Length: 492
Image (cartoon, rainbow, N blue to C red; front, side):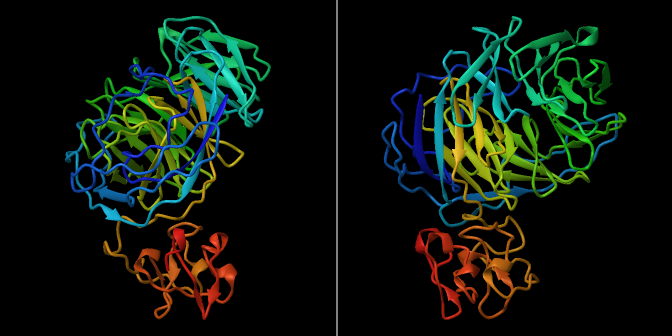
């Protein structure tokens, strides 16, 4: 069963895209590694309650929802590196960071596909067979499933039963999917044939990823280890220097290292591990932030979620951390890098949304059509879309129609009312300016100064032909050396 909605992004999630007829009841507590918890009511950046926006849509048809409040973003200071022996996290408040507004974000399309068996879809991966694979967090049944990128059919493969269902899942170098489970590791072929084997020394397993050395790397959340397993089924363990750090999510960085979150309150760090076994750990500035998901960004940095701090963090390969406040106060879960160059994340509990943050720190949020769906994990597909699991509505969702660009403003280097992007990016036409993406709403080339400025500064910009206008796809024309409009919705 499929339902489709077109959502307009909101800075806050008070508005909804509408409830499909197949929406289910209230969400149970989150399972697996991340806390799914509930979020407070959506509030504006000044603390006031945000008004609801958008008309509801009906199930089964494509309907545009109403608009919302302009998006906002905030940033905080960065943390430093600790020694291999760990230490207490750096201080810092739970709030902080200037919130900068911008124009309304672009629309996206959310499609939802109902899984045949109610079994709480959890972690998700894009498989080497060009299908979407996900684990079932429930043991009714204990299973791994795949679904075609058209949204059907679903194929479910039952695996060995433990007290909880399979957890993390990742593509392997051998054309198979590898998954974590209670006390073990599993390998499943595209045909559904699987093999499972125990983690040595009675270990456990949580997040998993394909490493730079063509081996699978996974975290042992309870046993404080990051481990490696090759396709030859040979294991090697690496003990995290900080005791009881709770390593959870893990990803391979472009720098050739493995990066992981240390979610325990007493750790609260981002860890880095070389394939040779050398650790470095970086304290997150906000205490007890509960770092839950981590992804490699198109900008070469690692991006992570701070579930309990309600922030998105960015860490450079050198270990410099920047935090971006989610103005609505919603809690982010898992995170993935999209084909549009932005980061996309899940918001479970009462937020019930998919969030987007640009590499400049602009946040927008899109409510999931099914109420109380608990969007859990998210992954980018080779089809250019984002796919996510809905833990409590038993669905897999697809985010398409990504426009990139749009509601973008940098978190530093300019005034809140718009201005020059550092004042040193020379240009001759609007499409020379890419700091805010490559779509309608991206920066323009200042008419007078010939440097890139924010589109929201309302500078008329510079063009020679229609092709020089970021908003050409929405009907903008180059007239008199300026584009007829530079923001979504036909704004000048």
